Length: 398
Image (cartoon, rainbow, N blue to C red):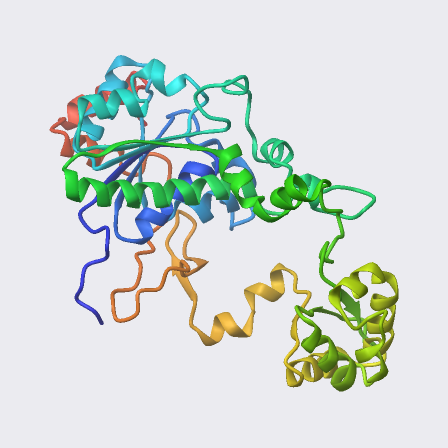
């Protein structure tokens, strides 16, 4: 086992966070060794704790985004609670918040205010639409930002747009917050100063819209919604096999098309047919292309179809559901599953995607109960047990 430290060992993060965008960002920091102190409301904490009870009584969103953190329950609207938060921030390297626009500033916990008081601090404001502009104070939930950023317009079928099945706007903002913190810490290592980092969910997801956005801006019209198909590549879709399964395939160039026609479909004439020989022709004749591919694959079992496609060097996949992913042979072969502790016992969780070969395994701590670390953190600030008990009686902490 490696004796090297994790990259963020010794870094302390304080977060006033809720839902997904900030919690998922700070969980990435915890994975890499940072100590993450999560400040929650005493009356229920992060509202994502109550989204569902699917994870053995815990909320699936909360488990996913919050293992490896310490939870302190503090009422920030009480001056005594706000002072506790400010003392924690004074000793921190990073602060992250995603409160409603303006709420952090009213508490003096916005990035600009904190960085002015603590020059070495890296402070992150995550918002829906940014600090200025006509949308600055607009409510920004994931589905709404998916719509504003245009993702929903290119997702779904020709008949109906649909939102992504994961919180794409939240995840995009989280990952830019994560990388923004790493960049700011590197800058601090050179200059000695931290500084504010601003992340907007709209701007994050708009960046992820790169291909359809540029296609529409420069091509004169937005790409059509095509379900599992691709707007400008064919064949690129799911096809039903003889045993009722579905196989997805993607042909990226005309050489692959020739191999597909000859080796998989066993229809060599399609390789040179002018209606199919080029991607431009196949896209223009998408219905005929899909019909030819679907007819041939429909005579094969799922495994036989996959075997033929693999042998011919054609990119393919099965249409898995989440149960299939939980038992995916590739994840098992690479030993990607671990257990994390929680108030309801061990829970299965994936190793984070960042792998450090030859280094230590990322840290995957327990999912905290609300206020589980309140007493220990207050003692670390010099507060007596009697003082903590008084705060608890007054509802300032939990």
